[in-house]
Each structure stands twice: as structure tokens, then as C-alpha cells.
Image (cartoon, rainbow, N blue to C red; front, side, top):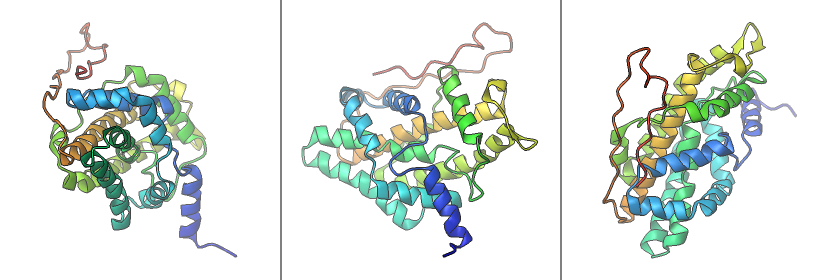
Length: 267
């Protein structure tokens, strides 16, 4: 039996993104979690940090049906109502647990919500139905992993940290839109003259490097925004919020120009 072209594209994408497996490298997921905690109230940051091993395990157990729904939608660039409903159900379950007084389980499930904004912030997953030439995603993630410690962490959208639970679907769709707009840069930079470009030939001046850095900051900000929106809806403590430090660009040649801007101070 021959499958229609659309079905073949879908099967191919699902094969690239196994259910329950995030495309971000494992160390990047842990870094996103740590940096996102720096944008939270002290009490919530501490609760998540104390349960970091359980949260990381929760991320690995992200519902396969939700992962499949995302894999089906991302090539088209639009999250379907059913997919958004499934994502919202994950958030609402956390709110229920916290309101019922099951704080430890609720906080772990809250941490697991990281998978939603992190995956939607990844330009690799937001590629169109044409997919990637073989080897491009390998080199992109190798470029990211090799430079993660050098990438500045910036607050992608300060207003996102004020969103309510009802605003989350719009936030999540905006992540897809922004990630999709950057996918073409990865293809242009890492696939030239019919060949995959070795990531070791690229440095901080490469647009692909810039895309990976922006995507990381987008994931950090959106993760914190998602956690905060759900935490507020469960009537969690939002006092003692940290203040992000403004870092202005330095003049070329400045001794500070090559230093990584500091992330917001941990509560």
C-alpha cells in the first residue's frame, strides 16, 4: 500500500523526533531549567531546585501522545486546537495537584512542563515539511553544545513573565512562529553547495551560532513564563521576584565585550 505524500512526511518527522524525547541535548535541558529558575520567586525556585532529579525524570516521561501531537503540528507551523488542549491539560493538572495540597508531586509536574516551551523554542523542530538534509541537525546541535557555555542568557521578553494561565496558548504559538522563522538560517549556514558544513568551521560570528543563542534564551524565558503562569493560577507565592540586570552592549575592543553577560542572580 502506498502512503500519500503528506503521510510520508509525517512518518518521517515522527521518526526524527521519537515520542518522549526532546531534541535539545540533555545538558542543554538541565541548563534551561537552572537558568529559568533564576527568573522565579525565591520560594518556587527553591522547591524546583530541591527536586531537580525528579523533575529531570519527569521530563523524560513526558506523555508520548502529546509529543506525537507536537510532531504532527510543528511541520505546518500551527498548533491545532486539540494539541493546545492537550498542552493546557498538562498545565491544569499541575494546578489541581497544587490546589489539593500535593505540593511535592505538583512541583515535579510543574518542572516537567519545561518540555513544552523548550521544544517549541527549538528551530530544528519547527522546520517545514521539507525536513532537513542528512547531517544538518547533527552539526547544528554539535555547534550548540560546543558553545553553550559562551552564549549570553538574555531575557527574551520581560512581559512574558507577567502572563496568566489563559495567555499560555498564545505564548506557545508565538514560540513556534519565532522558531520557524529561524529554521531557514540553519539550513543556509550548515548546508552549502550540496554539502553539510562542519560545525567546527563556525564561531560566534556565524548566523547559525546567533540562532542557537537566541533560541536558548527564548526557551529559558518561555519556561519561566510557563512556570509562573501556572504557579499564579494555583495561588503560589510570587513575592521576592528577582530583578534581571540590564547589560548594555560594549564598544568594540572593550575588555568587557568578550565576557558573557551575567544571568539574573539566583534567588
